[in-house]
Image (cartoon, rainbow over all chains, first blue to last red; front, side):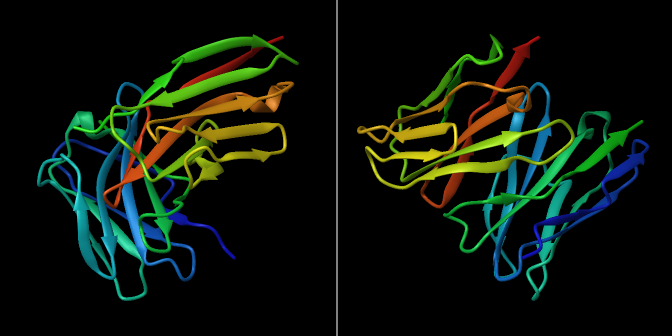
Length: 112
Length: 109
């Protein structure tokens, strides 16, 4: 089985721009979770999607949004980028969400 | 809110030594997971624990789900250079997975 894939792997943007990141889960997995990872804060939970519905949400501003498609692929969007949004964005998939999560390689976002 | 306290934050050891790290919480968890992350990559699942008291091994790695369901530990025996990385614990409850802040393992030459 192919693992979780994320595109792009690297991204450089400037403040004020917006960005869309993509995640394809392991085949058959219906839950996709997104995390922001920075050196100082560790893994911070953004949101989780299950069957095209946002099921859980972390404490991030509304500039961070996501969606999930019928094939379970998910996208994450960040609008009006700030310098502090520079981070590794990881997505993880699991069968139902409460079980083992498998991570993708991440998208490294740099905001200049 | 729910928090996982992972310790130590970092470790410096000699190759061949055994390693021990743990996670504790004031909350009860239904599942404990241990991950390892290499630089520039996503975390990789090492061991999953589902029952209180469960002791599970994966090669040189051994992890246990604490009896109180509020803690877990991970041991690595006879460390080798490729063990270098960040180890994360994660606990699952109320349909949410919470991560510890990680233990960074360094192996001295």
